[in-house]
Image 1 (cartoon, rainbow, N blue to C red):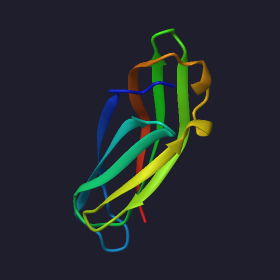
Image 2: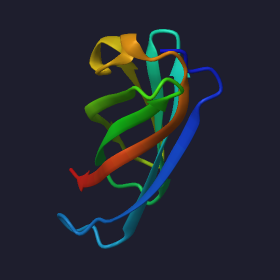
Image 3: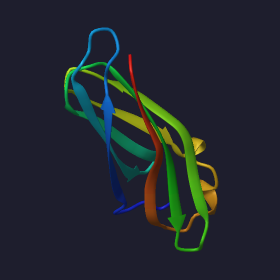
Amino acid sequence: MKKTGIVQGVLALALVLAVGCTKPAKADVNCTGAAAGMSCVISETEGDAKLKVCWDIKATCKNGTIVTGKGNCGEVSGGGKVTVEVPNAKLDNDEKCDHADTMALENLVITPL
């Protein structure tokens, strides 16, 4: 799939109440197209709890093909960032896409660890 210029971010809020944590934590996920798939950066933007962040990718191509990548996850903590590479092989219908026109991150779930 040609992903040049595709950038999509999603901001999620999770209330971290596990094992003594009472402060809310925020994390966002920003994915961009890369030659080998998608490169997604998870940033903990508030708080410092250890979080597992999972999401699905859905891209619509100019030729109408829908590309999906389900069950992508990464862990972040301490207000840090982590990059998760989603390979083309994990993107369903990737080979049928002429050029990604739009992209969305769906089913975003943040779980305190």
